[in-house]
Length: 374
Image 1: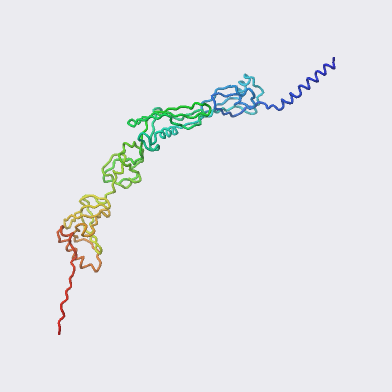
Image 2: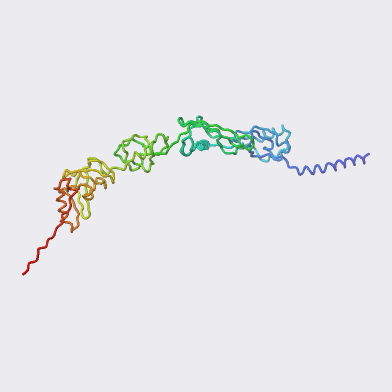
């Protein structure tokens, strides 16, 4: 009887030993200090390694998209025990951080997608020149991480008169056959970059760097080619303009070097001859412009080219009537041209304006007397 009992015990021990040896190779469940999830629930398999058949069991609701939540070790172990999961190794972990992954769409990304859907359509230009305003404030958007596709416009409506748009997008979803749908409404206006006055500017003022700022304005406000800031500096306006006005290229003119009624220096210049006298501008002009001036000495009107500030040059008698030089005039002539210059100066003083253009330096004729015979 005793032998039979011992044999039975030996048999049981022999059967138990392989099982015990097998248990030595089964890894114990181990708690994780940091967890990332993509779904809206946290499962046991997310919290611990070696969860076995208990891994798919949900135990917590996930944090909001793109956020992180914290659980104490005591809270986690209590929930696991309720699910019949015991013997979890925690090490020195004090808390568990759970992060829910998400795809983030910045407001700028959405603006760019809307502008791209409208680019070169409905009479609009480049996407970079389209300003988008949403009906509702579009802040950063967070989507499920499985939404990995691009924003694809599937329906686009736009009213060119009001600038209103209504665009539907779809995003391909890795975890779902059905795409995620988004819809945005608002206004889209084509704009241009233009120089804008920072203060009131008069016609006679030269534009300085501090007088201009660079802004984006609706294209409809700028009829014609917009002026760039760099191009505007140092120029004048065709008319006085108020602060805040956008400047067109057509509004700019070269600065006047000669202003109407301004005292000017009149220069008469031909090869070998250079004369100057005082005059008064009858009209304004920029460098290179042709203007009329009054010779104060002869009271005659001349036409010349603006060649500097307060300076008008009359070149050649064939172009316009030259001025009569004043007494205090200055001159520069070649030595060989002194008689001719004197004759020309005399003719400029005495010859009527209508005849000055036809004035020429008299040519000296030589005659040779016949030789006498002895």
